Image (cartoon, rainbow, N blue to C red):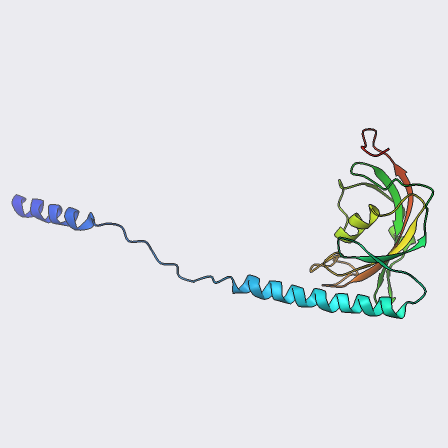
Length: 184
């Protein structure tokens, strides 16, 4: 009996010493979700850029410029007497409003109030953050932002919904240079 028990334990041990076989995944991920999302976002951006180009074509009173970040803008007040634009860590004071592409007011500048912003150190939506750095003190410009540079997929949880492109008039009131700023 003892011999039989020893033989049984030994044979089980030998059988269980086989090489481990890797488990196969239950679900194979192909990345198709990400590919579809990228495709959908590219189509949305193309549609919004088409809207922006139509707005620019209809607005013959202004000369629009395009920024390297993907927004378009024109100056309402231009200040050529100063060359300095906001740099990281500068404190800027500005006002802005938000309007839909169909010119429906979303937020008035009075509603938004006067904003003090430390450049690149505080949270603003991407288009506004980039646009502030294009303006000089005393300048006022109107920007057209595709939804990817505005509030994107989530909106602002208040008045701006999903994937809404916006127009914004920004007035840069004051720039307080950071003491160790490179440009003086």
